[in-house]
Amino acid sequence: MPLFHLLLVSVVQGATEFLPVSSSGHLLLVPSLAGSEDQGQMIDIAAHVGTLGAVVIYFRRDVLEIAAGCLDMLRGKFGSAGARLAFCLVTATVPVMAFGLALHVSGLSDMLRNVGVVGAMTLAFAIVLLAADRFGATGRRMRDWTPRQAVVLGLWQALALVPGTSRAGVVISGARLLGFGRREAARISLLMSIPTIAAAGSLAAVDSVLLADMALLRDGALVALVSMAVALLSIHLLLLLLRRVSYTPFVVYRIVLGCGLMAVAWG
Image 1 (cartoon, rainbow, N blue to C red):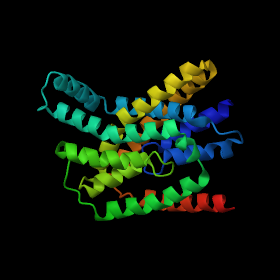
Image 2 (cartoon, rainbow, N blue to C red; image 1 turned 45 degrees about the horizontal axis):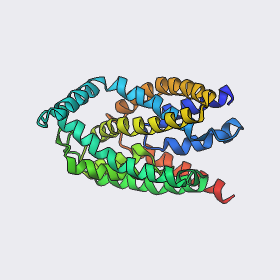
Image 3 (cartoon, helix red, strand yellow; image 1 turned 90 degrees about the vertical axis):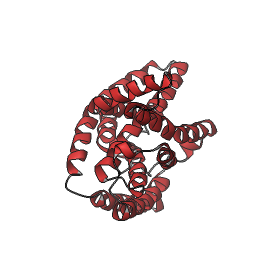
Image 4 (cartoon, rainbow, N blue to C red; image 1 turned 90 degrees about the horizontal axis):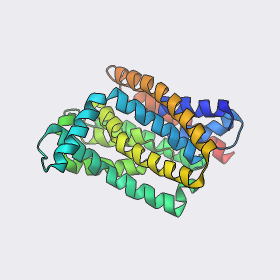
């Protein structure tokens, strides 16, 4: 695959993964910008794995607390803050893993990768994000996160397997409707990406090894590294921005992008 195409995928993924604008939808547009064929789901997932590395690095203290919490759970201790957070993350990951496996086995995941679907979902969930951000309360913090709320956010996250919905966007929308503040909703979304992307990346790696496609593994490694570097900057800027503004600018962007995509699809 051309180097320019790989770098374009990396930058687009790193810049948009944690913004509520649908990184998967943007990745579907890359072939048109690069003037080449679709990079395929394996490269897309490699880009996601790179952004996973960025989250782990940026939230390393939380990750260490979660790891300690997992050890506590294995010892039957569920009372620590780390154990509660780890349990919520595991609980929130179950729906998306089940739905994702069903799409992968059935082949529906490839069928959903088209401009019409992306455009429609980009528009629809722009309205959802606007409503959630406008009417959601702001009193809850990460320490208030409960397993029941984790199940609800897990179901929201499962919707993100449809390109154009935006994993970050739907989780943030769900978290805002549950009463979490803007920065807290973004933080929950970022941490929820860790087990979800790790599971998807593991599946892609197994598929690549079974296919003995070393060129694909090499391209994927490059994409992952560049995506990680760009995503680190993107996370930092997002959390800084949310100190001052609402999610409305992202809503406006999604509406413009969605209209453009629908125009292309109808054309």
